[in-house]
Image 1 (tube, each protein chain N blue to C red):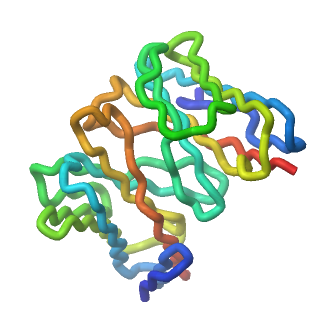
Image 2 (cartoon, rainbow over the protein chains, first blue to last red):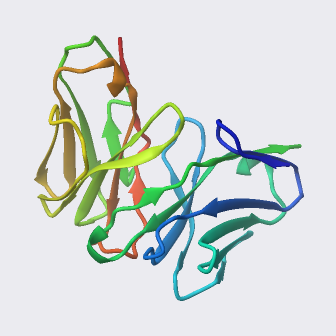
Length: 114
Length: 114
């Protein structure tokens, strides 16, 4: 299940299940969104991105959904594997004079059990 | 042939010392960044340079001074280190620094101030 509290939200799934990681953003002007994966001891690694003129984008085993009405972003991972275990971050770019600045969300710890 | 490389990987030092972290990217990107990740995994931008010019300067103590000798390098110098500076520092780059670009991150420098 998924929980949110004082610590990082966590999601535990069994290998082969589908995972859904959620993210709420606050800036209605944001027009570009990215999901990153961070494994222990490594830097954030790009997974998938989406622009604000889209509501869904698919990659290999991953899908990002964007709901601008409620300012919500989700990452779906199909057939989750142990190698997917990591911290997942959503990030947004507010456009305009933000240049390339990405504002990161809190992060969610995904644990995949074999 | 690492795309974004930063050194050192680990840095342990005493309070009051001055230290530098170096970053190089071989992607031919125009824009480079420094992000700080705290103990709760929160990632926050510190600086951004585009073609050696400072573009983004968030609210960072002036003990932190970035320097970009050319567009492939962005170093971070920290004077008079404090306990609260302990964190993981990530360098990143993007092609042009525009609002719809993903960032490529290095593997991080873990700074521990004793």
